[in-house]
Amino acid sequence: MTTWNDFNSADDQNSFDLIPKGTRVKVRMTIRPGGYDDPSQGWTGGYATQNATTGSVYLNCEFVVLEGPYARRKMWSLIGLHSPKGPEWANMGRAFIKGILNSARGLHPQDNSPQAQQARRIQGFADLDGIEFVAKVELEKDQYGEDKNVVKTAITPDHKDYAAVMGQAPVSQGAAPAPARPATPTGRPSWAQ
Image 1 (cartoon, rainbow, N blue to C red):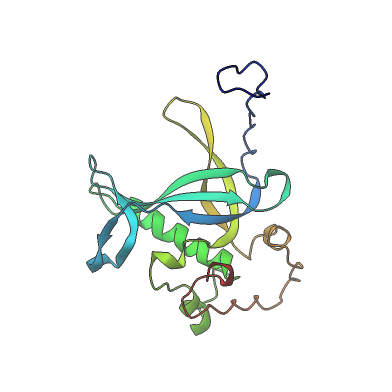
Image 2 (spheres, rainbow, N blue to C red):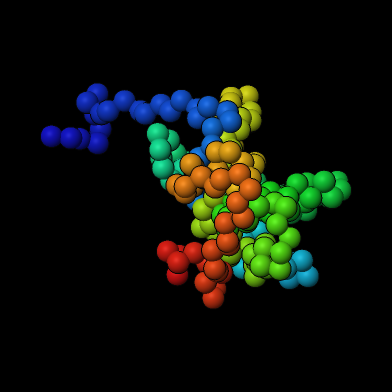
């Protein structure tokens, strides 16, 4: 009989080794809402978070690995939207979101067709909540000086590993880029409807 006051027979904790730096994995990104809105910036729906101490604004994101040997493993990262120190953090955040959209929607970064430009637009942060894309796993120090996995780079269709990780057949050299998957009327993936 299991009792809640004697833990001698309890299982040992799982210890997870870090996912090796540079590993490419397919992830689903969810945004942990922070309740901060600024309609003048287009930040609505309570998805953004503002740090009360620094004044910085960001998306607090969780990335779950969907397939392969690291399936169900989670990583957390922030996507910068605003910093009182200057535009660099917001510019890095915008570049990351563009990479996420390119990866998720099968867009080559150099594709500037009207269809690709439209596919890089979102109605709001809700369009990013639940998006699936290929991520590059990186390492960063946590508050205790320990290494932790983070996601700061999306892998796009022009990368040699993209097709294999996304589960698509490789595109031959010189072939046209894969067409963007049509967005649903709400811009959310079909499984999130």
